[in-house]
Amino acid sequence: MLKKLLMIAALGAVAAPAFAHDAARAAAQQIIELKDGATLYVFKDGKMSMENKLGRAFRMKPGEVMETKDGQKLMMVGDEVMRLESLLKEGHQGN
Image 1: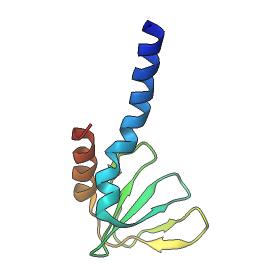
Image 2: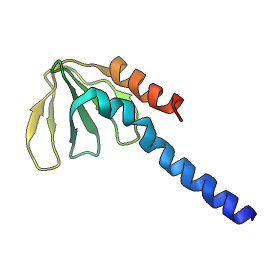
Image 3: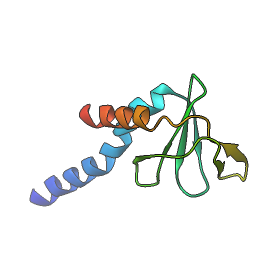
């Protein structure tokens, strides 16, 4: 019985980060996976925000060049780190 409870808890811990991204994914017009494991969120107003491979919003200077998984080059427009951070927190609170 204890083994089953531990397994359920472990599965819940793995699933929680996926739900945390729901608010961010819903707010984004486009989500692009980058070569370094980061994720780029493009919002409806054209501004962008980055999430590192650990799931945290991080700052990137406007005009910096990023590379997508398929080798395309993109230039950062805006820096909506606070927007993404609040969306990620909103997703965590919903769990």
